[in-house]
Length: 353
Ligand SMILES: *Cc1c(COP(=O)(O)O)cnc(C)c1O
Image (cartoon, helix red, strand yellow):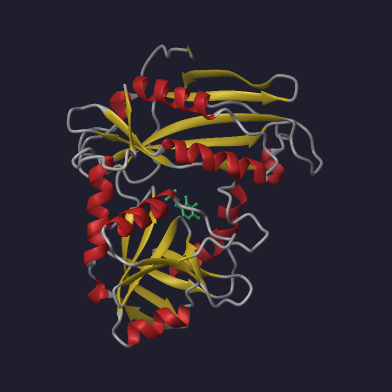
């Protein structure tokens, strides 16, 4: 892999800085180009510096672009490991197919990522709960107006040292059920990690924040009846000892943390089902005392307990507003594998050497 070195390294955030999420970026990035003639080519690691684009570049007009989110974790011996990257590459190529973007070679992306991580190793924080967030992205770069799939693309990976996704850390989050705006419809792009989905969700997110909520809990677009997910997390409910998560019906992002949690639950013999679950069922369970826990799962927030849900102007407290037993078990199991403090029984930890 070609490496273009920087003259001077950037200043890193001082030890003990509250990193937050997505504020700092490392010295290097990985890039690779696509043209119709050459396919994917020119893979290299280069300094992470601003690039210039013509304003007629198609990504600016039609959002033909996709992204991924994964993390690299500092291990107890100082080495680096990434959590299930092959799953992210596979999902990214599925997103690409949905958005008319040519599939990329996952082995080149993985080699690029590893080269990048080794160069930017010193940016991986080591305080508890921190990680190096990895953001692979593909954008359409053809300079042309006209609603057509681009014939040129840029694939890049940038890295950001992060702390906790929510400002309040592992404190249970507050969700508001959204029953006017829609995130995704069946036949739409909700299953793909594509840029436009997130622009479409921002209005509801802003209104939720103004009311003091962390995130929106989305319902299905058709009936506004079934729970789908949160803006960047899949949802789980523990009802009467059974763990329930909405089935992947086509409008829900197939989370890798979600998939990992389902596997852990199955292996521990905890009943878990992927099915449709209505918001009425969730509220009824809260009212009859069988809703023990609710939590969200995602790379950025890992496992995030939900302490309160507002639906139609009523607030429903879950699990006394505290992190529940199953939520805690999943958090400990997944983070134990990620941070290398527990045995990697599933082979989910990919060491970078
Ligand atoms: C990325 C994302 C998730 C979580 O997926 P992970 O693979 O677990 O990180 C869930 N929902 C949406 C809408 C997302 O964009």
